[in-house]
Length: 151
Image (tube, rainbow, N blue to C red; front, side, top):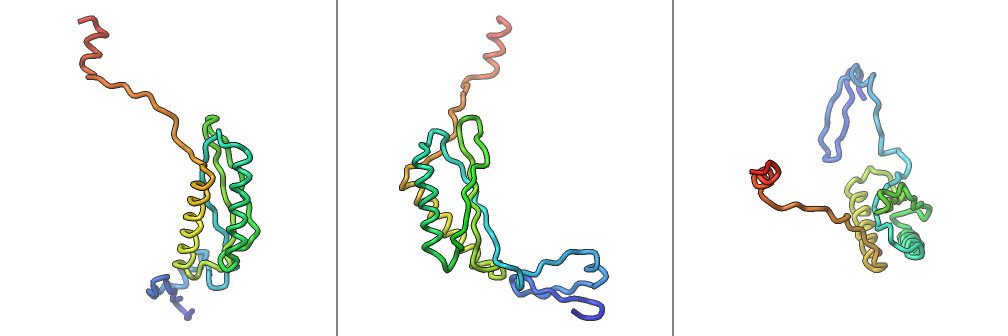
C-alpha cells in the first residue's frame, strides 16, 4: 500500500495497481489471513432410494472426511434441501477445508477428489437419479393442422 495507490497480486502473480480513492469505497478480501474455508456440494438422488441406503451414504461420507484429515475437518453436515415433484431429493454436503483458499489450485484438487469419492460411493451403494419420462409427439405439424381442420 502506497500513498496514492495499492498493488494487488492476482492468483496468476499479475500485479494490479488501484488508486486508493477507488478502493476507499470497495470491500477487499484477504485470503492470506482468512480462516479455513468451507465448501458445499449439492446433489440429487431418486426419491425411491431407501432410507437405510441414505444412512449408509451419510456414514461413508463421514468415513471419507475422517480418513482425510490432511484435507478436511471431520465436522460436516449432509442436509436435505428439498423434495421435488415426489421424484428426487436434493441434498447439500457442507464441509470445511483444512486451509484457506490462498492456494486455489490445491482447493480445486481437493474438491475434485471429494466429488470423485462421492461418485464412487453412489456407484457402490447403487444410488441413482433419473429424469422422469417425457412425452414425445412425432409427426409432421402440417399434417396435424390438416387433420384438425378436416381438410
